[in-house]
Image (cartoon, rainbow over all chains, first blue to last red; front, side, top):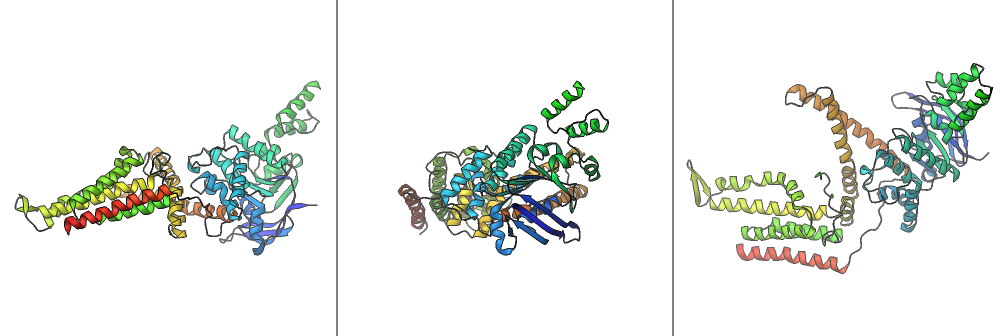
Length: 274
Length: 255
């Protein structure tokens, strides 16, 4: 066991008394990519804010083995990069270069290191050459990638993404998905809160179902076929999987539930052959 | 080009654009102060000519500047119209028993000329560098950290606020709302503005969280971006010479 994130008995109540998290327990291995699913109001964003120390509830949060407390907060924020849902919340400086350099400069890196990190982060997200642009003038898809660059420039071990594909057109969505895949290949631990279940198989090895407490945590292909559980939480099953679960329930298809287009084509070929 | 984007022409190439922003701000502000302290109309007109020349050197489009100074002009124009009626002196024109004094007209023209010259100079000062560079330069000239951050964030989010208000206006219009001056219209607009403020407040909390998550502790980190060269100082000396020259001439004329 080599966990990047460990959460033990985490509870949080908002000042108006609303319970957002109620005894949340889970552990995420280093280098893995986990999708965080749950209905609206399930506490997903609240949980993400705890992982960067922006909210402090009752319970224990450990990042890379170190317990989160006041003294370790600066270290935690260096290790955990948090990308917010609305990029306009994250791009607050007058130029993209300053936004991407904001974190590294706060870390006290030298100007040379800041420059290297900024150009690397902009290259990873495909925004090289736009460093001088005002973030306001970027397209929404570019803003989403720029927000990711502002965090990548701090070279975090753990990346927390809040709805990285929301409101994106299919092409931009595809770009973000391949970016997450690339970061995963580089060994970054990734936790992604997401509503679009169809892209979960493409970005995550595991799924964490949250509804104020952990409802289910397991491999993506095992959790996303639990139709009753997902529907009970008001969540969808990925469209391809949903179809083949119905075929399996009806006895027309005996094999593994496919999640991708290619897998579905093979599965359909099996059905036709039968 | 919207006048919210005061730095919309900061990409141009001119001796003013290439000037170290710190020296540029300090020198041109000094010239501005020198002009607004002038008492002689002839010297004030010379000051206006200097301002126009600096604007010309900066290559900022005159049409853009004219569009921007029309509002200050609205405030400045009444001076030569009202002061002749209120300042004692020799009348040059009498209308229905009301005397228009030469002294009043001259004072009004001086005030208007100084005002126009100062407003014209604002453009080379703030329009020839990206706004954030100007603010960082002002910080290095001693602008307090809190004000620096207020300016930077206000400028960054002004456009977003404008878009959100435009979006709210479109939403109102799509449901048949027509802006008017009656109480019902004002109530609706008040509610829309109120909602805008609430959303702005909530956004500011999210922005603050984003900043803290990236290690923000109260100070904005900044690269040491400015480098002063000999020609920056030379330009400063020329402007300083103009400022002092105007004061000297004014002293000679007025005494």
